[in-house]
Length: 220
Image 1 (tube, rainbow, N blue to C red):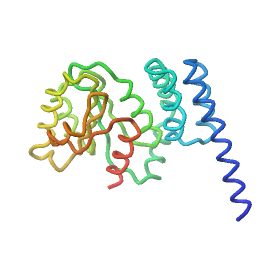
Image 2 (image 1 turned 30 degrees about the vertical axis):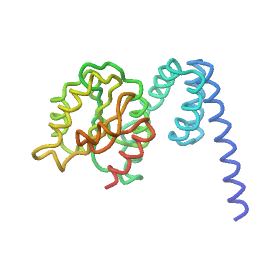
Image 3 (image 1 turned 30 degrees about the horizontal axis):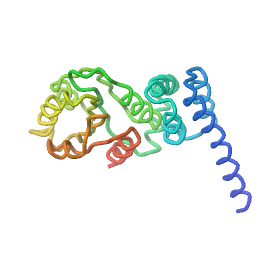
Image 4 (image 1 turned 180 degrees about the vertical axis):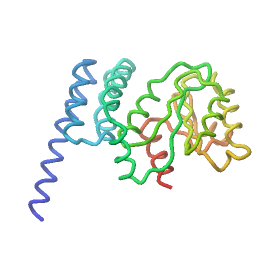
């Protein structure tokens, strides 16, 4: 029992070492250092959710939007190394079923927050379909009709996208799609009040909140 406790303490200290390196790299806006420290943390089995929540997000307090841009690119590069066989094993371990469709709404070309969420979801084995940016409402409806799709994520940074969001949700919340998919809104312009008004299932103000909601939905 004592040995197990010591092993856990050692693992925690090691994880903190790698996380602190990530914080420093993101704070200093050193892209290559970000890539190296994120890779080292992943190789050391530090959970991706901790790398993002305890490392990247803390570093962003110092580096702001430019840090977000670089960190999203650095993280995405590492997550793309996960092959399909590994992804399926991760999904099975977490009892996931179904696919997640995500995209930035029509008229909006911002994708940083979306890409961080995608990287986080992929690292846990979720099956993701990325529609990209400037996505028309009808494209979300079309994607929702694909086999095994359980979640639609709609991202937007600009409040001018709200009419398109409203149109997309109205298409996703009628007919045979009502009970097929959950709809989650996210991004800087999103609000819980607007999500409730247009009858979206949820709103997430950051990638971690979005991940936790989608994680729960895919397990049901």
